[in-house]
Length: 321
Image 1 (cartoon, rainbow, N blue to C red):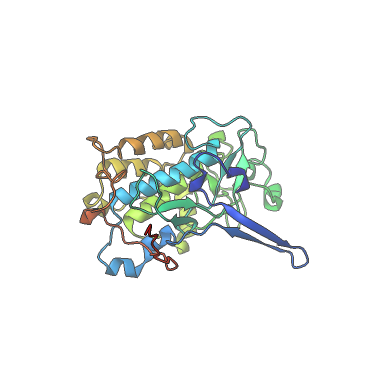
Image 2 (image 1 turned 90 degrees about the vertical axis):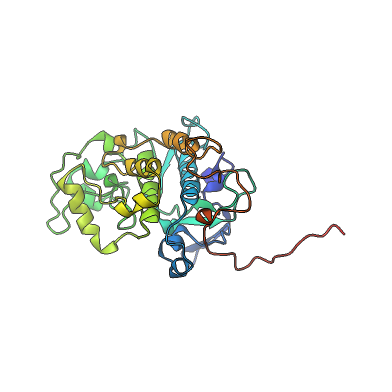
């Protein structure tokens, strides 16, 4: 997290305030910034939210979260959310655990960008890796002999992460009982290395679950392996047909394009940034956010978002008198 500090757009990534190491107890504590509005998981699974009559997250709010998460991933990829290429000497981060529980909701920004919605902040970098095209540990588990893979402690695609939230390239293709390697056409393909496209898949998986209003089925992780093993075109993460009645074709197609099996078939982060800007431009015929990118106050009913309120807000007011 320290490597991301003071980078352009790093406000969309979780930052640490302080840390403490207890040498004798062999543990450490990291104090992070406070995000008062829970996580995106709350918007997916909250019974309270559904009782309040908001079974779907408004499209404008979805675009706000999409925008925030892509900006965070741009910082991981380039070291700058506004850049189109890496900063000199920058090594890209692959998060490897992008899921709703790790997207924290901070207070709305005091800026002209989606001021009515909480700000999505990417956190939990515990298994993130820094890598580049020449990194020998990237794709190691599909390149080296099996006995080496099983002993490896620095293999990036070693099945780390949370079941149900892993991109295809994150899953080590070894049979769970026989330990024999699955005969997949993707083995040793350089395009299946972990990179920015892995983060894109993770963000899209969150968007899909937010739009479907369901969460990953943790018990079907082995079925997920079977999906990937059967055909490259498999998409275990797909939008429900019911979303057609709630969300625009532009948003649904953009989200679906990000879950392609092969990383190079997914949109790049720069392309996603451009598309999100295009479909949230106030006054534009392409605006799918109903002007919410800059709108303040007096929201239409369909743009209202019920989210977890700040329990510790003091509601104090400053008086000039």
